[in-house]
Length: 227
Ligand SMILES: *Cc1c(COP(=O)(O)O)cnc(C)c1O
Image 1: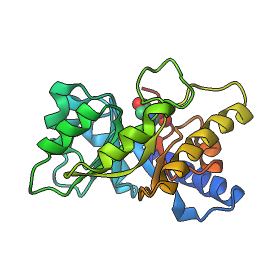
Image 2: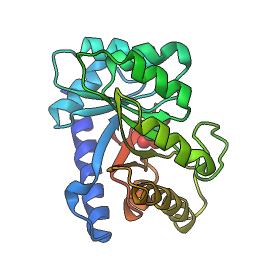
Image 3: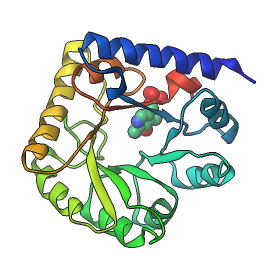
Image 4: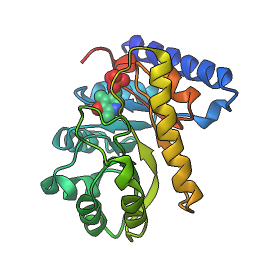
């Protein structure tokens, strides 16, 4: 067995712990999502052997093949990539979570297509906080209306927000963008939505995201290596 994935996971977990301590947060208040896109089932098996159970995928068909090949393991699968209308059924049938909902039409299809024998789909709305080049994500102005509509859909449970900010020049700039996402998250909670998940931070900006209130970091490269 290749020990480097296990070593990488231990190092990332130590970094999460240190960031939590620096921010005065409980160590179990931040979940680690291993982003396994482009890596095969063997890499996921190694990460599972090292204690991880939640995996994130961007490319739907690649993910479905992997999920099918790993049916023997008790894993939780998170869709974190853009979703075209013609892929909603695959997502509804195979994933536990979706972080990348940014249009009501997609959310409605996911809810309608969620099989009755599965629990509701756990959903985050992707918000484009900094107006960055990545065109994905609802604008902050349109967020409230979308969140209220998604929360009312029968076969999904709205859990929170997801962000993919553009890389910033300085740590302070990075933290300022993360703080804006946290403020949007808290504003929705003030309006009565029962949200518990702020999916924010990747390999490069994990510590800054945790300092500003992330509850889930999505880490690929720092666990599996360069894609
Ligand atoms: C690829 C990806 C990640 C992981 O990025 P790394 O820099 O490899 O940690 C996290 N979130 C999303 C949405 C991604 O597409």
